[in-house]
Length: 406
Length: 111
Ligand code: FES
Ligand SMILES: [Fe+2]
Image (cartoon, rainbow over all chains, first blue to last red; front, side, top):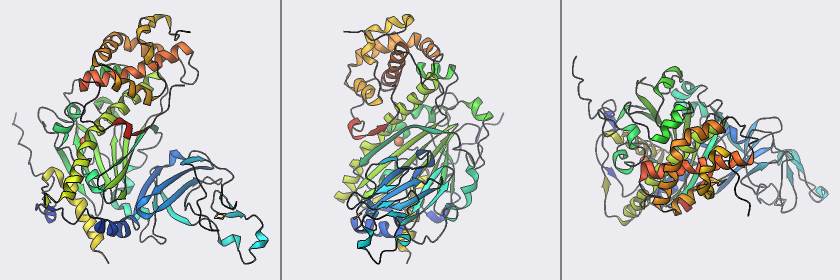
């Protein structure tokens, strides 16, 4: 048998020489001035992941999302006609908010608590108390201000641009069709959120490479992604699209489950970081997932520009959303979606996975606040990005492109 | 005081009935506030029978679980916390981990 050729250590960037290998200038990218450009040129122009359609299962269900970067409060609501729409949470009378809870069910729509104007679940202005006081008011053109809202594979996106330059499908581009059905039938197992004192790009950077795994996650998740022939858990393939990008991570096929993981696996209720390869082989994943069709595939890291990261695992997923609050503060939300728990066993499998992932990401956050502080200190002028960090390099490249656009 | 009811076959978990906690917030705080030796004792006692406990619970619907089974279910959920600490971390919580109080968790409770 031939000895396998040692894998090319520069395998991710070989196909993308245009990105170069130079250190990244960190003196200008994390300032509040730069953030002002990002707010207007990126976050007010691109499609932003906001929620899952399963957050709004019934007519009248709504969620309110705060987007501090645009000072916007956005209502996503499933109308009584079953359609999901987005609106600015602002009354047409004197602009007060009309929805006050982070989520709820409002089949009768939203009533402003200032003077009682009422809006239907489709945004229509339905009722103005003492409307004879407003002789010129036309109810039919004073509904809630709509926000461009569209769906992709069970995810709800909005675009704050009143006239988006492209549709969501155009924005997602070439891989958009290749995830068909992956999220179907899954439900929320768990959600986490935290506000971290670090720039949004610094935060994303920590979740799109596995170079840090053997160090940061040595006690937790390193074992499932590192192995004898891949001791540092190197990512295998990378595809850079126009603005988005994906890499694939290999699993440790020789991983020895912990006693608890073994019980979970033996009861056939496994939805964990440690893939069930038999199940994975059986499970026909959509074309776009595991694009290189690796046999020992664990997960992909799919970054949807600007701030959403999706990890499709075999039969379950994580979605991380990074919402910039200011140049040095980010709100991070993570959704773990899984097959519905049908009994205590599957519920406990969800519990195991959610608990483990919580403690894995808690290992990440501590570093990020230190990094932010050091960047602000100006101690370093640049950072070095290796081949395994090509996802970061591409992200900064795309950000630059938007900032430099007219 | 009424003792927490447990299914007869799982009476051996009686010393750990304070782990019968409905919400993930309660369970994670209890883990973090516990001595490692106590976590280990809980873990060592439950592990050999954890599979039996789960198989037993699988006979009941999640929606209508009798009180005794519900308590066993809650203790099993706490066992998951203990297992992560004992099998992986080797401490109740890593000192370098991001403070748990800063993280919001949404997860259905065992009611
Ligand atoms: S501001 Fe809403 S009714 Fe007056
Ligand atoms: Fe990490």
